[in-house]
Amino acid sequence: MWVRYSCILGYLCIALCSYYSCSYRLISPLPRIRCNHLHLSNNADEIDQNETMFTQKQILKEETEAPFRKVRIFFYISLLAAAGLGSLISITKVLALLSQSRTPDNDMYVNLGINLGGIPVLAYLWKRDLDKQKGLLERIQKGGSLAGLKIKLLESAGALTLKLSD
Image 1 (spheres, rainbow, N blue to C red):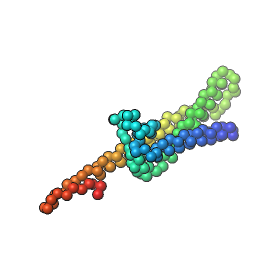
Image 2: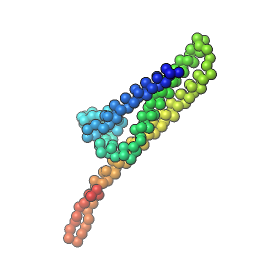
Image 3: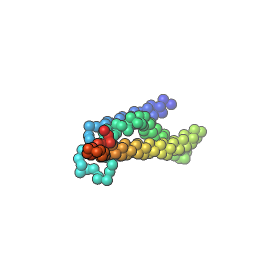
Image 4: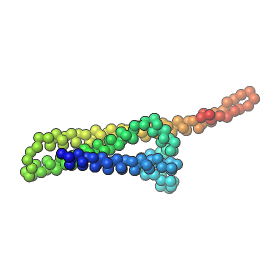
């Protein structure tokens, strides 16, 4: 029993380390990052022209508007890893049972069903959270571009030009 929990704890530590190494790249001093959070580059030749770019300030604003998103994403990734590992172990138990080298276990099929049912649910929640993050970043980017627009106020003495952000 303790072996099962130590394996789950080990995979949670691996997922935690990989998540934090990815998040350090997100908070890098580079001026812009790619939206898919998989690759950071300061070289303009490596980045596609049609890909959406976000500044560091926009990413930090998104993190303040949804502060627990990174925690949820970490739990989705770690629970997906645990469900995948549990499914792999349960499938090998079923194969051993089919080859008649193992005695039947009552919880084996229940565990396999829970693990296989949890994988698509967690993957859907993870994708939905990433889509909401991208939508929020696009909204923040659009708001920033609107704030940079200039307006012209007509007065009797002359025209006065201001920015919306002033």
